[in-house]
Structures are given as C-alpha cells and as structure tokens.
Length: 419
Image 1: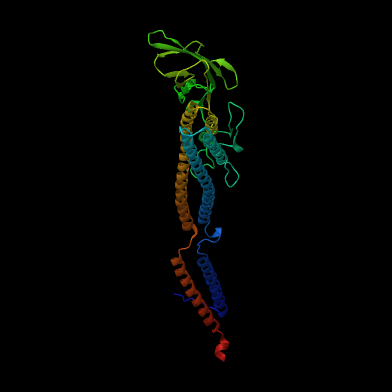
Image 2: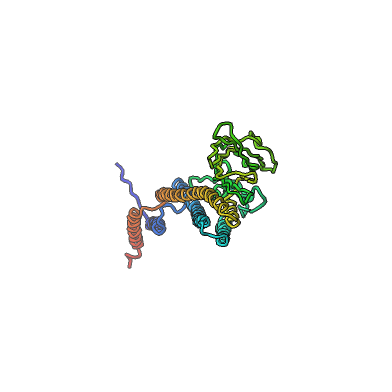
C-alpha cells in the first residue's frame, strides 16, 4: 500500500480562493439583478425556449391592446350613432304630433301654415342629423361606404333624395364592430318592402279621399308612378251594382309613360251602388277611395324615396291645404308613412344597441384573453420571489464564507510566523 503525498502551495490556495470569490460574486450579482427586475430571464441566452414563449405572449398582449383601442373607437362611434338616431326619433315624434294637431278641425289655414313652418324646421334638423359625422370626420350612417355627405336632396322627381353610398351593414368580427350604421336602411325607403307611397288629387275641390297604399304583391311593385284619371261611375252588370271606370297610366323610373300592365282605360270593378268605399288595385298595390268620384279627379300614386320626402309631402299637404277634406287626406297619409319610417329608424337603432352589447362582450372576452396570455408570459419569464430570495441568501452566505476563506489563506505566508 502506497501513501500519496500531495503538497498544496500557498499560491495555489490563493488562486482557488480568488476564483471561488469571483464565481460566487458573479452568481450573487445575477441573482440580485433577477430580484431587482423580478424576472427569471433577462436575456434570451438565459433560457431560449422560455424567452421565445415570453416573446410570443408579449406580441399577443400588444395585439390585444391594439384591438381594444380600436374597439373603443368603434364603440364610441356606434354610441354616437345610436344617440343620433334617438334624437331623430324624438324629432320625428314631435313631427308626428304636429301633423296630428294640424288635422284638428278648429285649426285654420293660418295656423296650419305656422305648423308647416315648424315641420320644415324639424325636417331640416333630421336631414342634418342623418349626415352627422364622428370625431374623425366620417359619416355615422355611411353603410358600406359613401361620400362625406351620404344624403343629398331634394333633387328632381321622382328620386327627390338620394343615398350616395353602398347600402348594407358591415359585419362585426371576433374582435371588432363596424364604425358606421346603414343609413340607407334607416332613412331611405323601398317601394316593395316599405310600401310608402304618396297619393295626391289634383282636383282641390274634390271630396274624394284616398287611404294609405298597401302592398299586396311585392313581385309586381316596380317603383313606378301611377296616374288615375277620368273616374266615372256607370251601371253595373247586376242590379244594385255600379261599375267604376278610369284611365290608368304608368310612368316608369326613366320617365316613360305607358298604360299600366293588364289594365285598359274602360276596365273597372263592380261595387255596391250605395257604397262610398271604392277599392283600387294596381301594380301590386291597393288603396281605397272614399266618397263620390268625378271626372275631374286625377289621383297620382308615387313611391317615396326617403323619410325626408315623406316629411316634405306632409309639409306641402298641410301648409298648402285649402279645404278640410284635403287636410284630412294629407294628415292621414302622412301619419301612415311616418309610422313606417319610424319603424325603420327604430330597427336600425336596435341594431346599434346590439352592436354596443356585442362590443361589451368582445371587451370582456379580450380582457379574459389578456389575463390568460399574461399568465403564460409570467410563467415563462417571471421570477419566483420566494425561491429567488432563498437562493440569494444562500449565495450571499457562500460569498461571505469565500471571503473569510480568502482572509485565512492570506495568513499562510511563512513571514507571518517569522515575525
């Protein structure tokens, strides 16, 4: 059995102590840096996999924040649009109330002109609200895209008001809602869908009144204007029956005048001689004439393009009425068409409310996603403070012991003993 003898010089012990001190100081500094920042990974080289996971999480958090800022802007725009439609509804209700008051029998022509003036002010207010812009200068009701002023008019008949844009409502996504509402659906009218028509009689002295127009067959409704003239009553084919004959001319959208399809100038309908309600059907539309017809009566049935044209007709009918009969005709027709217009505006306002509710749901979902992604990032790079403090104390103690060892090594010099 051999005995190995190892000699350790003072210089070797000194070098080992210095290396130990430097190593522990480096580790202690790194732990102190981690504790100060609260992160386990300060550089990608510390843990490449965790660093990549943390970077992806930060990218997702940045995108969620961007989507949330965009959603806030979209929500504000839709909220303003919904509020604007609320103002429009209030103004329309006031317009309707004034129309009802104009039909009161005790109101004279001068008072009706005063009412018509207030009605004109309400129409101008509603038209301005329809062209309202958001804080970025974009129309609130530009649908799928429009000019800076979506609604223009009045222009020449028959299309007296126009929507300068692409009708339709933009769809919401998982993280966003539209910036604007469909102004075409709110303020413009479709003859076949809405059935808003104006019936006027050029014979101011006539006692014959027309009811509101009802759509009976949407497939036949083309948006043409119809003119009924030369109304005459003749004996019917059966006892106690009378036959109403009239001339009917259709004016197409391009201005072409043609006899109405399927109607000849002498074709009419039998009805009881004693009846004062005479049904008329033409082009998928029906209305009822009340009273006694005459050859001087000339009725024009024309589709209304917008809420604004409905209000213009009401203003003209009430302000220019010369007889109580014409006032009753104008008021009844205006109320029928205003109610349809209000229903369209309310429907679009309801869509705005649903978009705002959806924005709230999207915001809540994004917040939950943000919490989840933040947790993923924290797991990837954040430091466990309790474990970090324990490791720091351990390294601090080791560093203190290394310093004390170095001090002892320095006392191993022979000269210290010679003294």
